Length: 174
Image (cartoon, rainbow, N blue to C red; front, top):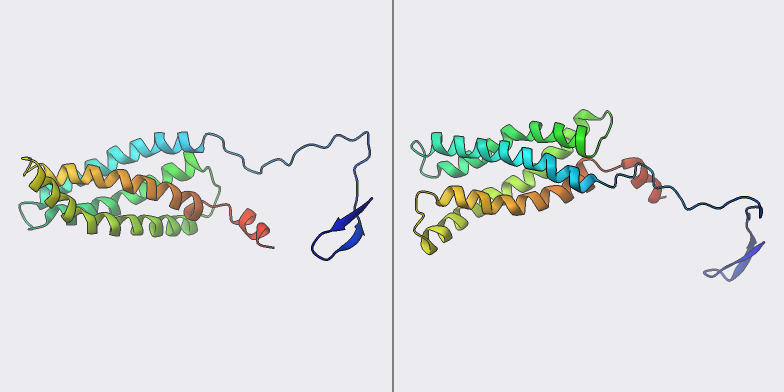
């Protein structure tokens, strides 16, 4: 069969499947239809664990530091990265091997999230204190608000960076 190459204007021979062979659509390698659902379930566990760490460190550090909740945020994030990494690796993205490489990429995604969270917390705390009467609870409420944006940022970061299928990415670049 001759096919027309629209870019060069030339014709070339192309292989055609015999009439008796069934042509099936390409199978998506490593298709994971429930990745987002699994991410949300594991993410809920990670959120409870991470927020619990944040609350505990805030409780412990607030009497010692002026901005104890910022230090608590950084410590809680650092402490819970490995917990989250293993949950995402084993149950969500189900990747094999590459523990160190994926953990380093995961730390990179979380570092971006931590920086954004820590930088926005003082502004959100101040806003909550000005707009409500929740002066003592403001760091906890702000932590929950910032967490929503962190979850979205992290999902896309993990999906496209931490646990990305590098073989498919390198093949599509060819």
